[in-house]
Image (tube, rainbow, N blue to C red; front, side, top):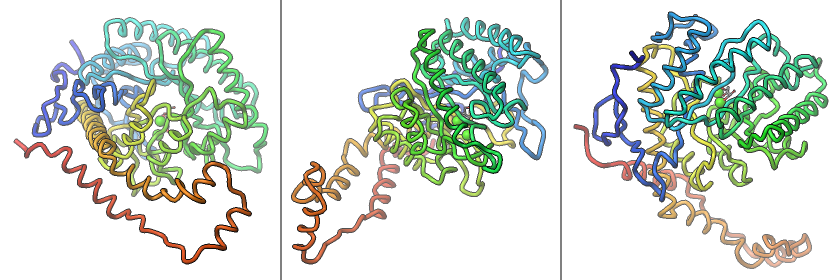
Length: 444
Ligand code: XLS
Ligand code: CA
Ligand code: CA
């Protein structure tokens, strides 16, 4: 007896299908840009939202109806593993991600917690032997337990710092054991509330030291996964240290870590930082630091981290544009760090949500691929910057200009001519591609 027996494996039925349990655009085998959609998109399910999350929010208790609800403790943890591998197979998703506390309950001591983890990890390892689903990344939750009230690797309390080190040590061991392709650091409480009680320099220096210790330990045990920093500007802290990609890069460079880390970019964190999703992806990409993606979306009417399933095709298209320009996600993936709304409390909603997210990114992939093939944006952008391919512009780019050269050129200029940036036209072109690339008939 399984948890999702009433649902068959989700199949691709094409854009005209009205079957709620079918993919309309995600066709894993279909090749786009020389690779299958499965290889291009590398979808992943987030264990915490889908198997551990209960729907509780600051105003109300948990309300999700899950077929494993009657269980507790380690029995509950084991049931979740069974349910997880069943859902991975039903959705044919190649990856999953977890925090340590998502998969096993915390014990009364660190040693007991680690024993719980070991038991569940060996169960997961067994399931992975016969499953196609692999571990995209794992991480340590260093924000939930009260001990992390003042942070973890940026805490004022050295005992907490040590505890955090022990958790990441264990996390790296699990990553190696399960073959995680990446290891993520999201600094949930690595930040501060007020400078009145904060030694900013010591906290940042300690954080830098902590990441070095993690790198050293990974090397020591022979764990070769990619290290990822996941930026977020705030929430739960008022000011989180890895605010966005640009500030994360400055931090990594200062502490001599930039050769060893890439970024895990979450859409909703980008918008919380006052950026677009594609801005963060572009910023990381042009610096060779786009590692992986937490695929979700925020809500323009709500100012917080709502972690909705991604359904905005405009956003998935622009995200896939960056990802394709990056030559793909490499060992990263598109992890649905997304939760069903509180009102969507039935277990079937988990399937609807993932199908919606996977289809939305499949559309984004197809449209972005076509935009790149046709060179629509590339041609426009290169024309727009063509003044830097000749004359004074070329001298600037080749490092042959100084202020004397610039002044001489400026003094000789007559009227300066600028051209329109044509953004309304470009948006209309994207709309055309969105509608045409996917127009393969009406509904049936
Ligand atoms: C929270 C973060 C978190 C990380 C992993 O906002 O998105 O879930 O992805 O700790
Ligand atoms: Ca995330
Ligand atoms: Ca989030």
